[in-house]
Length: 383
Image 1: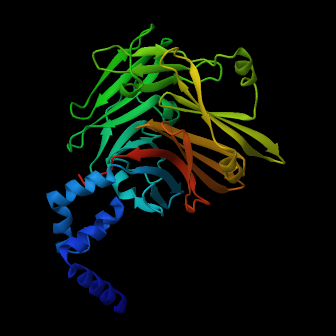
Image 2 (image 1 turned 120 degrees about the vertical axis):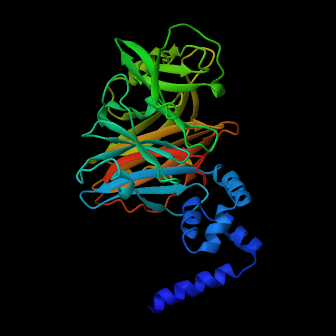
Image 3 (image 1 turned 180 degrees about the vertical axis):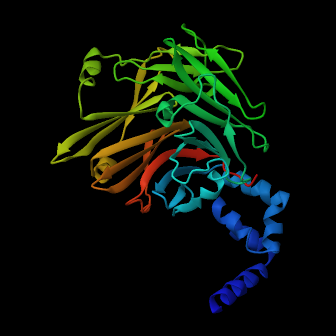
């Protein structure tokens, strides 16, 4: 009883502060913290619901980049963990009650596919369905099956899909992915406003496109040659690109070699080289390559400096990655497991300055949990 009385007293004391000071404090919080504050009492709910506050808060929060890790403890909980580059701790978001609105089996395997803005897409393995969740409005819906029919979780490739929220605050979005149909890449696009799919076949040939105005989806990934589709205006057919590494010796050295891993996304590929250490591997070097807008081939961009490699080069048994390029920055997250313990590395490359940054992450406390998806996101807002 004393604990609840103390909590109520603290909330009342906070609300007695000048409004300008309260707003200043709220603006210093991450979005999940602001949403929690909205539930404290009517005064804070009214303040946070004010249109001027929402507008200023959205301007601040939309500049943040989030890393989301979805983990699930078997038959216990479904937790989404989020970390912002403007914060210093992980936030826990329980999505179990939201998912239960459309998934009625407690043992169902749900995987996080991708996220952008307030929209998160999950894949249901047994139902072979994609579920859209708006974490702010709490809206949940199943996306109708695409023209290819129901798809299991293993059918989705992170580098081959993109979620695009509408610029307005309508909550609508577009979901695109590319798939080979009869050896030809086809782009499938779902519009949540019309609730319909449309498809466009990509064409061969050279086209005039600007990298900043294009969306790159990988239809096939291979060390020797990839198949990437460049998507520009809806009035221009998607363009097929087949980026290769220019040096034949380099191509040969990256085939049939077990010490290299590749992570693809947004017209880039990160190449990680490792060395054996007893029964594990250790990262030795990381290179970033991008599609050249002149030749359409892979073009060397940069490598992670040795001083950073010395700090992140830890033993690992299994490693996966996620890559996104946006607003002049390339962000990469590497998630590795060694003897049951998870380690997360977040690297950012600033294309204009050529500088790499290592974002330090606190422990996500994932030991004993099942990893069920990882993604970057941006554009979180109160509406």
